[in-house]
Image (cartoon, rainbow, N blue to C red; front, side):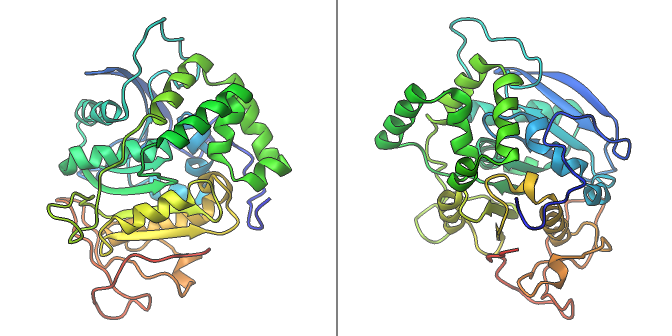
Length: 357
């Protein structure tokens, strides 16, 4: 178990929301590609963006984000923003099984469903937090609809499509393993699976019992049929496409997604990208290290001009930290303003970094 695991938090997904956080409102939103189950926490705060989350395959918003958003320090952030949790089609708790022959939306179509959510609630733009498959969906969303996205936190993103060898390996794994075990190998690093930690056991049980298995199989198949994200660092190829908003990439040390996240980092604009590699966090840093991720997220928001007075206890004291903010803006979209860790004097810095925390 990670050395900085917070023993106070054993909520790995489905336990009730604590009384300290805002009540939840559930909605089913009609989109061009079917209904989306959406959960809203809090209410819009002026012209500030909404925080919009998208979970990984095998999970739903509860299994993926409850630990993170119920973490005590996270309440300092969520009191300033409305939170919008999106469940991929058919992945929410209690979802009905899709009928025989149902065509699950492609990864591009999943991204194209999100403007309907933004418009339904009247959000001007969002700050996205996505994990794994959800990170891919949000990155695609930002590429197609850049004016709707102010910033992205992409955890365990793999920007590459599956090649034939990868596809064959996945197919073979599905023939020799149960679906929950196949998904677990995507979520957790090998050491975690071999040691069969309490966390792994909990997720094995919940993936098998909480998420509709037929619906999950459709999402799993579609994720493994994804195309390359088709992004390139500006200046490396003619007419390069990349994410225009500030991005924080997050991955656990030796996590299954580490190689993909490193490659994604190489394809993004280094002046607007932060790369956070978290030690002792395993495959799900938002679950095992919610405190450190919360601190990094606060710092990321400050870099976009929000919450300048938010308390910093961990990363602010780290010599590896280098992104903060000089102002808070509630009206028009803020422009990132950066300075060094000493907070004395403004100056341009390269935001791309590796933080082992």
